[in-house]
Length: 173
Image (cartoon, rainbow, N blue to C red):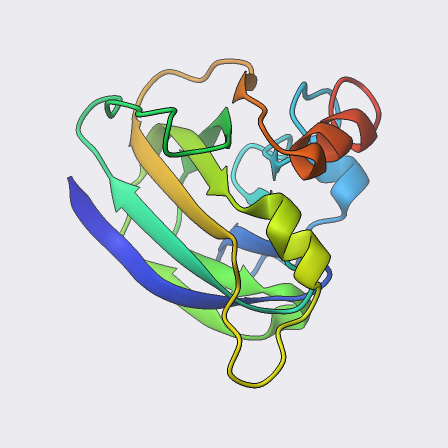
């Protein structure tokens, strides 16, 4: 396992992205079109639209590159989804509105991405941290080489994730 990014990353409107260079931010309806899940929009194939509980602020994010599917301790993560991602060019985490950009050293290829979340309901309730407060929610993307496959809801434990699965997933987009 190789850590590609670990730190806090800015979110606005409860979202951030993984984008190839020179691709503008994704529209939610297009990002989630035809998917079952509403947390990680991958309908475009080469980009991800990532939903958070916190509306605005800095959330802890970890991105790891694995050689194979990682062991998944679902007792740690409340919400887990999987999508496929095709990487053909340099990619980066990007904040809403073209703000902060964090390049990721990810080799070209087809990957399975497991997006894991904890504390989404608490993040939504907080909305925006005040000075001295930290986001209660955190996120991890684990990526490994794999053939493309339909997206999958592995676990739904928060009301926030259930809402987004209804709103953007299951043909709702």
